Length: 297
Image (cartoon, rainbow, N blue to C red):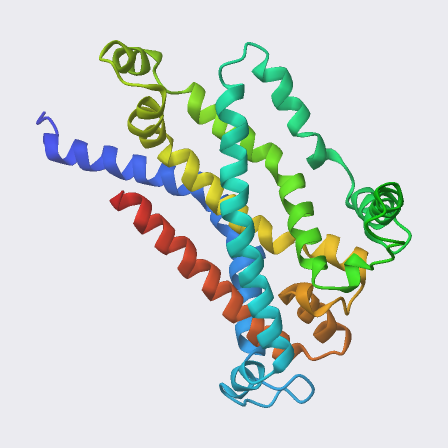
């Protein structure tokens, strides 16, 4: 009998591997298609029709939202919040993680920083209200301090009803998300080979030189992960803003999520769908650009 040709055997092995790969990936792909891709396609369809009659209007809904003042304010506030919070969160997390990496009890202390993530949002909001409303702890403290020094009188500032609401929201975001940032920084720092740092020390490199030329270049992957997670989590701050100030908060913290919620309540699904498509496209472009920048770095 003739033995089968070797190329045929190789081809059959490749087909088996490909079949096994497709069988393994099929459930995951079907889940993504059913719960992500198909709903997004439906949102895309809704963005091209009217909400009530379903009449095709093309890009008219997009033109409507781009000329909507509330949409413009929400986009500006969301971008401002993201651009302020992400650099602060990345920097603060690293400044905490770098000294912690030198301690033997880093694991125990790391667990403490994750505590804010375990706290219910309603509890956090209650604390912010107790601190920052007119008769809150901050105003009481400042009033008592003014009485002791004689520099000012009674203070009754409503921080959540002024421009200060933006910085209250920034503080809430950083306080809640610093924990996982510290953990990710620590994981990256502790994964750096000690031999590299010791070799640099022996060669006469100072602590700042070791940090700049050895530690930071090895943390590129950690930085990418932290920036992406922080960017996505910055769009989840709506719960705190909504519970603190309601559906129509101060102008400085009126975010895209407030706008989506109000459009949903008013059954303006066409505008909401158009805005959702724009937001999803923007997030995708930013993530792809970050990926490209990190690949070139």
